[in-house]
Structure formats: structure tokens, C-alpha cells
Image (cartoon, rainbow, N blue to C red; front, side, top):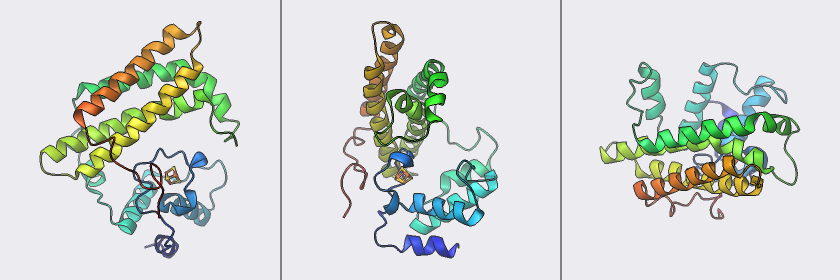
Length: 233
Ligand code: SF4
């Protein structure tokens, strides 16, 4: 175990599990100094001599080892990671045939086609003190909505099988709901008379996704991510 990671984990200001269901947008996160994930990542980069634009991990193996170390620090299970690594692609049992996932994928692809080119130049300017602009917000969340929804649906199926904690399903679904709400606000800000025919279907898809989550995971809205949805002690 990395000794510095252990020291960070023992810092009483750390908010337990705050990095589990966050949007990973650390540039704009209010709890970086209280986040085990952020501080260990920062320390890892420092120890490996990573500079500003360098990727944090030089290989998949390095990323897996880091993920396992972080999970060991806060006592999180790694059963999904273990299952994915131990099986051939699509044989891990971590898939979903729920049509809601296909809808989220369609949203992600359409949003990417509409906004990627415009947004890459803006992202290249780096984080801004006033916060992200709407196109950045749409692009930040477009694929995360799909990924976190898929994880929520897989977790929910495993809860029904008696093999998983409902917390993971609700936590991922809550993050998806928050991502949808922010994306919808951003899309509304981008909407004009000229682009309405492109934007309105995206907003309608977000609403359909939200309804689908509420039907399948009614506990998600009540799930509180301490430090993000409510203050931590
Ligand atoms: S909780 Fe905040 S600082 Fe920690 S990983 Fe998530 S976005 Fe980054």
C-alpha cells in the first residue's frame, strides 16, 4: 500500500465516498481537498512525475492497480472490476438489455455530432473561473449519462438477484439524474429559433430518460451524496 495514500485516507477532513457518485469534473468541484480520489490521484501524479497535460496513467494495468488501491483504502468492493477482468468481453454478466440504455446511447451520439467540434476549442482554453459554458456542460455529461445509467441498471438487476447493494444502483441513478438536469439547463440556454429543431429532440430524450429512471429506481432522487447534495460534517 502506498504510504502517502494511507496518510491521506486517515485525514479526518476526507468525506467518505464522495468520489463514488460524482461527475468527475474536478476542475469545478467544491470538495477537492476533502476527496480521497482527487488527493490520491494528485499524489500519484506527483510521485510519477506527471506534468500538466500528461495522462494520469501510463497503462491500463496502472489504472487498475490504482483503482484497487483506492477501493482498499475506503473498503469499497471491486467485484464488478474483478468480473470484467476475469471474463471475455460481454461474458462478465455486466450488461443490460434495458431499452433505456439504448436511448441514452442515442442521446450521447446525437449530442456528440452536434457539439464536439465546437466544444473542443473551448475545452482547450482550460477551466474558467466563471464555470463551464453550456456546450461544455452538454459534452461533459453526454457519455457519462449513458455510462452511469448502464451501471445503475446493471446494479439494479443484481439487486433483484440478491447479489448487490441497492446503494450503488441509487447512487449511479442519482448522478445520472443530476447530469440530466444540468444538461437540460445547458441545452435550454443554447436553444435558438435556428437550432430548435436539433435541440428540442435532445431535451425530449433527457426527459424520457429521467422518467425511465424514476420508474425503475424510485429511491434515486432521495439518495443523498454527502458533500455534493448536502453539506458534510
Ligand atoms: S468528488 Fe470532486 S474532487 Fe472528487 S473525484 Fe469527484 S469531482 Fe473530483
